[in-house]
Image 1 (cartoon, rainbow, N blue to C red):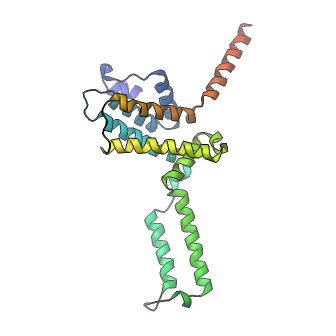
Image 2: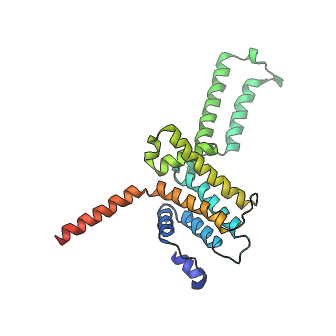
Amino acid sequence: MDELSNQVPLQDQYVLNPLQKELHDTLASKNPNLASMYFGGLSALNSPANPERYSQCAQSFRELMEKLWIEYDPSLKSKGPSLKTKAKTLQKAYRKIRWKHGKVVAAGQMSTTSLDGFCCELDQFFEWNNKFLPDRKEQTSRLLAKMDPLTGKLPTKIMELRVQEYTYLREYFEDVAHHNRAVANDAEFQPYVKALENFLMERLKPRTAASFSQIQRLIEEGERNG
């Protein structure tokens, strides 16, 4: 926030409400860039003279939702070889059993040892792909489990509903960001903003944890005063 204060005139700054400030600070504690995406989206949204404010806000929120799952799965930051490199390695292994002396080798002519070896190559490739390049549903499931450890202990149906909710919000902001969905006014757009804020707060900083912290503070104050 201090950096923003140095760049934006005071009268033009968007002031976060208590919930937004709490979410912003929680994101910042994980990665300042996440907090910047969130604040940038709100700043764009609350610039009435900006005709692109909905799409720009949606773009920031879409990026926030995309980057969160990477932030909560450190292994994705150092996944090693690229998909192109992995594909070339697999192609090389395939050519070894598929071609001989410039001619195609039929499956029936391949040795069991060669086929088993190539199957192992395939197994390793698909394991790598599932770990580092999961589909969006898998991304979201992992993200929610990482953000809130208790999520993984929920009944499967409830977990699926949470994944669907997050996916729906992400798709909504993506459509608005790409101008594939028109937004008439704030009354239409704001509920989605609030839904995302509440969803993230419930995962990142559950209300129960906050309540226990407040109770502990009250107990400590009572002991000091007693």
